[in-house]
Figure 1 (tube, rainbow, N blue to C red):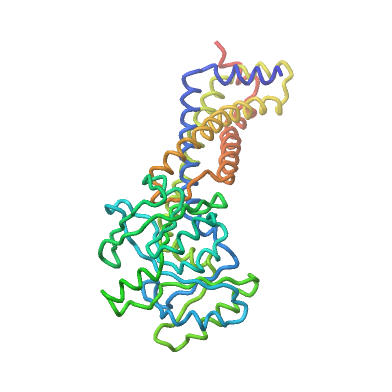
Figure 2 (cartoon, helix red, strand yellow):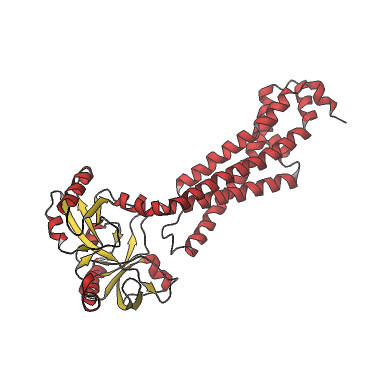
Length: 385
């Protein structure tokens, strides 16, 4: 108890310097936590992927379509238990900034493949009955203040024009990492309109979603699907949902790497701040440590005082930084919900904060401790008075 009291008094002997050091650590930990959360959000789709779902797209690129007729051949491939399809629509609500993921999907089968989308039976039935019906995520519904039965008009980008829909259902995520900003409508409705305006794009889909019972069969099923359509005008590439999502992340991999590097630089900055504080503290207390030596304090006890003070400062700053991370992440997530539909502090981020704090607090005390222990009693007492 006396040691803790001594550490506390030593830490706040220079209140301004200690307070500024703690403030610097707090801001650094807050920044580190926010950046790591951004990285986690970037991979949210990958983490939420199911091992029992495969995605088939055109082998050239996702922007190239595949015939609707492929579905019958895929359905009869061994180990395929469920099958659905859809198109990326790319519409915007009112103005360009109101962008969110919107898809034209097979209304009869699509949600059978996504048990993480929790939809009431009434909502799902109403959606299936209405040709212009829509099911949207709870987050996007709240953002725009939509209610069941409301008309919604999207401006098409890939398929121009104003597209009218009616909100018939709302889904919420079963898991914390489930995206609740998506918007789904009938593929048939889109296809009927496309037949009138762009016949060459009719009866074609952008992707197939394949359900399998055994994840260990994923590679074999993928190979069977792709072999079935080899040497056709629309060859396919089939991969696990996780690999499919990683393909999108890899397009912006450079940005993710930069964010990770910046988060590492922040740790170096914290180290420099704390090391500077501890160096000044040890220099000021050279005489005191010499007196401790004359009173019989061993090297380990003196080292414990220096390390303890360094860790005391960094732990206070870390604690404040972690506490502030949660409200800041919540506000940032709301402001950036269009780009990061799943944005929350992961337990791994808090663990990294704590590890970084202990590492910085310990490393910053190494040099001051070495110098203090190396000094003789006579050298230390010379600085008194």
